[in-house]
Image (cartoon, rainbow, N blue to C red; front, side, top):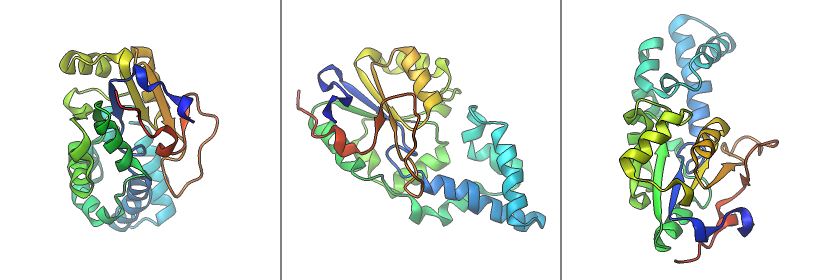
Length: 223
C-alpha cells in the first residue's frame, strides 16, 4: 500500500479532523441521535419524527459554513449544543493509528497541519480530549476564513496566509466535495477515508484514492 502516496514529493501533510483523525461516530451520534432526542423531548415529538425533521433542516445548509456552526444551530434549534456536546465527550476518540501517524510525520521532518470545518466550540472540545495539538504545527479552522473547505476561496485564502506550496502537500479528508476543491486548487496528493465512522461499514465507489488504515502509509521515510 506504500504506492498510495509518494513521500518524496511531500513537505506538508494536511489532515481533516472529524472522520479522518477522529472517529466520526461521535459527530454522527450527536447530530443524528442525541440532538433529535433532546429536540423531540422539547417539542413533544417522537424520535423518528424529530430525526426526519432535523435531517431535512440540516440538509438545507449542507456544504455551507452554517452547516458546521454550533452557534447557528443552537439558535435555530433553541438548544445549547456546545453544552450538549460535552455530555458525549467520552465518545471522542482518534481513529486507529492516527496519533502514531501524526508522530511519524513530525519525526520525518515534515509539517502536520490540522485543517477542519469544525466550529471553534467543537474544535476546542476535541483538542481538550485528544493529543492532536501536540503534533499539529498549524490548527486551521475554516470559520476563520468565512469559507468552508468545499469552497475554492478557502484554499486561496489558506495559501495566501500560510504560504503553502500546494504541489508538495498531501491532504487526507473523508469528504469528497472537500477533496475535489483541494484537488482542483492544486494540492499535489489527496486521499479519502474508507471508514470515517467505526460503527458503519467501509464505503465504496469513492472518486479519490482510498486510505483504509494509517498503517497502510507508514513508516514514513525520513527526509
